[in-house]
Image 1: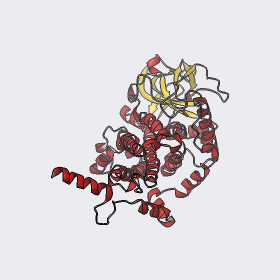
Image 2 (image 1 turned 90 degrees about the vertical axis):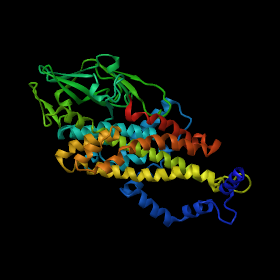
Image 3 (image 1 turned 30 degrees about the horizontal axis):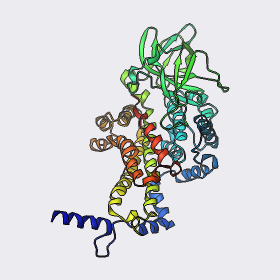
Image 4 (image 1 turned 180 degrees about the vertical axis):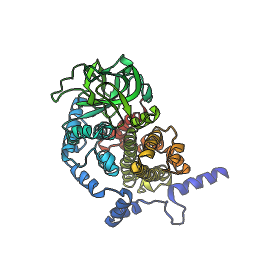
Length: 470
């Protein structure tokens, strides 16, 4: 009896219930829905929600043939193509880096679009605009922003982000790059004491970036003042290295080979006093340190808080990767017959693997929208801002920010708790588990590069290691 019941259940799963009712989602229904332009327009508006006109302009721009996938390039040619793609995108000037603070939703919307075209381009742009440019905007004085951001906006000055060290991944407080103030020359002297303290896996460092936002332990008059950020020139426009700067190429990777990750050593590199980002702390010409945040912990939280925007973009790219892959998988399911004329998408067993991934993608898309709203609302007040940014960074690192967010009045404790695991779910479930499941449903057609699953798998597996390079 048990075997008969099992056979009957499997028969219903595969062919319906024998009373004329088809499986839950039919290929005909999917095709009818997607063919209705009014339904598509309403759904797009509901899903997109913000900056729709800007997004459409960028998507139209990305129809340029230079942004079409290229699957037969060497690593050197792929990097050159990524730099050219970046240069054209930057020259179009869809936004400004100051949107990082002034209009976060516009900033995020602009960079989110790039992941639909080329994830190497999205990562290289994210390092330049978000990590380097955003750090300057958030931690720099008005004069420092004015001196660097206009050239960075249009790609004339290209930046990278020197936080991670070979021996210190997520342990930012423990980094060992030194920055000592020389009052006699009014300069900071930046030093890499050994290989473990070299800046490692830095996107753009091998050959693209002109400047680097270097995180270093500040020493003034023999006193340790904690981690601060310094703008250090790496190379000139011709690619010649700055005196005392050594770089090396991290080489070929599993994915994202359009990004030239590199290693940086600083051999007593001297930079002017004005090179330290000084919105939160300053060093006088005579060598007196002062900060608007006397608490060292608060200073550190504000200094590393700029990572949050980048982590939100990585989470958003996970949603994008899942959306692209599921589009391929669902279209394949409703075009591929198997065992006669029945489409594989009409088998309930196939649907039960495919549509939960689609549901998760929608759910996490809307959950991420809540995170973006939280991020955009954070600058509402000066004092709670620092706690909020620190807590948001902890949230993005999955270190548990519920109490901090609740204390800051930004979310209820329950709301913060529900958001706590969001980034991890996006990265792990969409980037790996859900993606792999949907890819296997395309059988052999999940493997060709031109169907996008294979590049997504390689790039996303590589990107998944970015949030904490420990």
